[in-house]
Length: 148
Image (cartoon, rainbow, N blue to C red; front, side, top):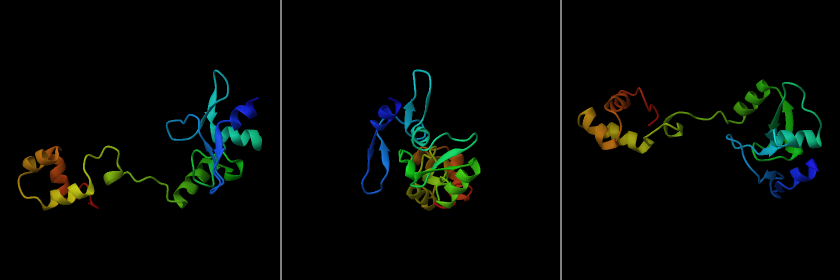
């Protein structure tokens, strides 16, 4: 019954071979599967257990396809946390946190270029771009937004 419930929650994607999870997702974008009324797990980990067997203590289930919603066991492999980090870094998924890629950023790279070209006091410019005046000073002195 668990196998049938699981299989009803993904669809095969013919071009990539991924089995795309179409049920709920967790906060990091991975498929979430409710095992019973009290327990749930990430869908790709459940897939590994259903199709390949137990996951050894301390091991992660990694994606060859880099698709968090994929549950195709042929796209999954086991590795340590270090293997997971090395795989992430090797594939360039380190996640940028600077400039526009920072979730707290209030400015775009184009706005930063405008700020650098704008004359006036820090307070005047800050009001124009709806940021605090210290941000303007840090941008103009290349302390923030070095790439902007």
